Image (cartoon, rainbow, N blue to C red):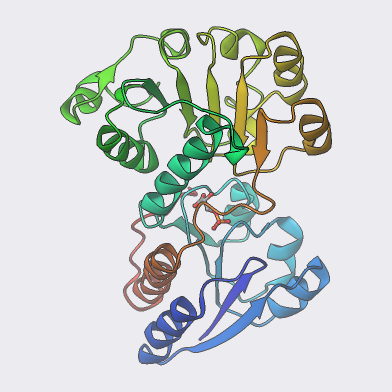
Length: 306
Ligand code: 3PG
């Protein structure tokens, strides 16, 4: 059995070592393809493998066509919008993610971005504090829960809205559950996005919604760039000089944001949320274990395609 780790954005070495141990202890072979850049290299590497571990790497129909022996793809991470699930099913390939394994890393980065934003990007002027401000968590999954925990340490008021998570679950975590997405934006000094990129959520963070935020509102995005309606956010930030946008996923219109909103906008050059040794180890080893469990015992826990 051949397992390919195909990561254009590589894991920390210590995580690769851990993955290798899991795979080799199971009697399988590990092949590593890092920083491959062009898709052609990925297409070549998948030809004779039985399983693939990926991160944000795009696995589309062309990849499934090339990977004749493929049985399973595990996205070491939460969001699997980079995998064509219908094509996977059509090729009889199981797709899994590793929910929760990198969520603390992403949640910590939210606060890295926020402190940077409220201290005026360290430009020497007086900023503000997070204490006693209200943080609105948009979607209360694994990352959202970690954000809530850390926000309390900062002394923030925390509220959340999640269209799919019952209010009682949010309240049980000691977080105020608001009734609607509009209420979340209306009542929050900071909104932190944790929604996946789906047909329903793409472009959903728009002018109307962000404009509900009180004066000085900050939008922080460690989720996906696709959920932002970039043209509308630009229009809003042109009209409202008080709004800041900080993101871990560079927008398509990064240059326009950067040139128009100096001092109010920041994007990491490369998505950094899950880039910690701990998150790489947790997600990478979980992915390796899930592959071994699937191949040896047929375990389909965390399968995301039908
Ligand atoms: C995820 O969905 O798990 C995060 O966005 C992390 O993505 P990455 O593995 O590409 O850093």
